[in-house]
Each structure stands twice: as C-alpha cells, then as structure tokens.
Length: 491
Image (cartoon, rainbow, N blue to C red; front, side, top):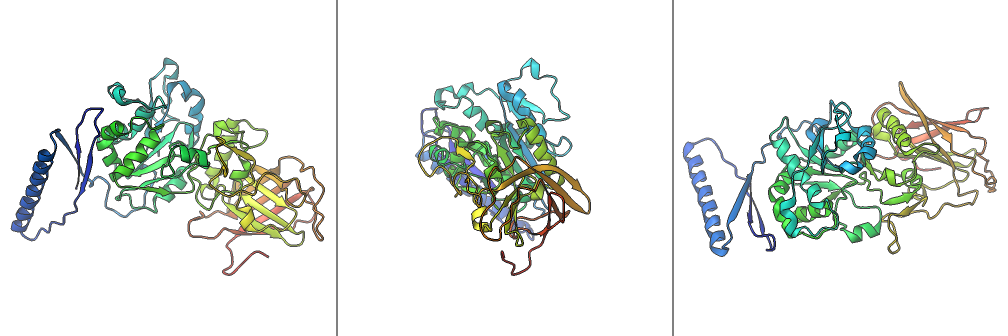
C-alpha cells in the first residue's frame, strides 16, 4: 500500500508533498497476529495525522493508492498491457492523424486521443483506423497559476490523470501508460520488447532526451521528451494522477507538459531511465545520416517527421512514412539496425540500416566511424557548439574514398528468409577512390539483402555479421546476414 499525503493550499502557496511507502507482510497463521498488526498500523496512521495537523493549519488530503492493480504474474508484457495517451489539438489533427494511423492497431492497441475541442469536420470519428477521442477536461480553474509559455501545457500534463481515471474504471490489466504526441510514430512491437525488460510493479519513468544540447539546456537533461514519447509504470502513473494538482501549483511557468511531468516525477523520488530508441528528432532538413547510423537499440519512436525532409527520395512525407512502415511490418525488430560488411576483393565497406538504407564506401572504414552519423541534418535550434548530444563524422564529404554510394529501401518479401531490396538514390558524381586495389561501385544499381526470418534481439547481442555475395554479371550486389563467429573481427 502506498499512502500519499499532500497539503491542500491556495494557488499562490507552496504546496507540500509527502510520500510514505510501507510494505507490510501479514502472515495468516493466527487471527491474533493479524489483529495486532492492524491495530499497530492504525495507530501509526493516527499518529502521523495528528503530527501533521499540529504542525500545519492547512487541511490535509490523503490519497490511498492500491498497488495491487498490476498483476503480480511474471508472464511477459504484450501490447494489451499498454494504454496510450496521445496529445492532440483540433486545429492540427487533420494533417497529423496519418502519423497515428501508421502505427495504431484497432484490435490490439488501446488508448485515446485527447483533443482540446472537437470540430464538426472531424466527425464522424473513424474508430476503425484510429483510437477513440476524448475532449480534455476544463482547466480554467488553474488560470491563477498558469504562467506557462505553451498554451496547452496544463491540459496535456493532465492527460496522465485523465487517462489513469478512465482506465481505473475500464477493462483489463494495465501495466504501462505511454504518452506521445499526435505527430509521434510508435513501433509497438519494439516498445513491448523494451518494456519487457523492466518490472512494471516498480516506479519507472522511461524515455529519452533530445538530440540537441539547446533543447536539453532549455528544459532538462533529466526529462523524457514528450514528442519522443515516454512510459510510466502503473505505480508511478497512480502517484502522478493523485498529485497532479500539487505539481501544477508548484510549477506554474515551465514551458511544456513534459517538463511539468518530469518535475513531478522528481518530486516523487524517481529519475529517468533512458532508452536510446525513443527519438525526439529535434533536427531539421535531411535526417538520412541520422537514420542510417541508428544507435544499438530497438527503434521505439520517431517524432517531428513533418518537420524534416521526406526520409525517402522522390516521395512525400506521407508516402515515406507508409514506405517505412512496410519494412516495419515485415521485421520491426531489425528496423534501422546497422550491420557492416566488407568486400575484401574490391576493398568495399557496406553499411546497412535494415529497412532503410545501404551505403557502399570504396574503402575500408572501421565500424567505430560508421556508427557515427554523417551530418546531413542541422540542429533544431542553433545555440552553442557542440550542437548534438552524440558524435558525428562531420558534414558530408566529397572525397571519393569517404563519400558513400547511397541506396534506399524499395521492397520486402517474407519467406524462409526476409529479402529486402535497395535502389540507388542518385549517381554519386565522383571519380573512383584511387587507393591501390579499390574498385568503383558506380555500376551497382541495386543491393539485395537476405536476413533470417527469426526475430532479432538487439539488446545484449552483437551486430549481425554479413557476407557479400559476388554475383557475376549484372548490376546488383547481394548480401546475406548471419550470426557472427565467436571471435570474429573486421578483416
């Protein structure tokens, strides 16, 4: 049992929050022992109330939260154990809903879109392709201490509370509450795999920072950015819901809802657990360099795709998203995962971001360099160097031995193995690398990648190794993924 005590106060006072946690083992072998322990617990609570009332004239509000709702069973988490709260506005929903449609599974996923209001043109609501909607509760009572720059900060912060209240009165077991924006693309299978590594019965706040220093400095390096999405375990969501008013009074001028939530989470004694697969994408222009060198983690989310160039050449943003999701449906576990092959006969290095891109270098390039993205992108806001919270290889090079030939995902076929095809984006427009023994890759028009049909567990495993199959004739290069040998290292 968790007992949360906080002092009710007027909007201009400094609210106080007390968290009392007690785990009590009550053996059932005798009635006397049970009765004695109940009397002790009752006496302790009465004593705490009397002390608090003596020390403060404000009235006390006690919120008792049962932590027995999540099952104690150890069976794995699945998508039905997650409920999603999606923050949206009526004015932006029409051109952002395709992001939610791309990942939502009506017969599997559960959750709600929270709108500031509903417009007639948004009805009838397509429940067969989207989550049901809710109009957020009125927040006018908070106006005396709403000094937030973001107009909807309080409304969006309270989605945690409203979602918790809906699910408490609703159906089924909930282990995780996941918050995201209406322009966030989530990869549900990978999210489930990530959350399965954690105990949902503990207090957990899982997400990731921004990719740019300016955003983290402006908000907090301890904050899980809301656009990337973040997960709250059931006990933490319960504690947040019970104390939301305290938090809103205490933090009247933070910029966004995610910063309010992070500050309240900190007040509850919880810190962020970082997962590299959540992506705020506080970047602009061409993010192909970033996506082609994805960190070693399952891809969980992509935000701000409507703020960057289409991620596939010669496609619109909407077409690009649908194209990426076609690869995800074939094998979400490998999506964007980087594998590196070497063709020793030609002195080529081939970097594959599965389901997205292939890069062929006419030179041997070490993995430690390839795992750093090429700066095809710029930061969200220019502040002070270094711009990014990760290392890069710098701006794209025009040196023939450093500039890769670029290929992008075209199609996928599933059988005994999964076969993906990648087509050349455009001619590289450079002479061949002149290092002795190197060969031009200009003739290659397509790259065919064969990978196992079995799911790939990224965490704790090495990159998948691969072999280049030298096909005689034609203009295609074939690559076959395989498990790395125990002591295998690059040639």
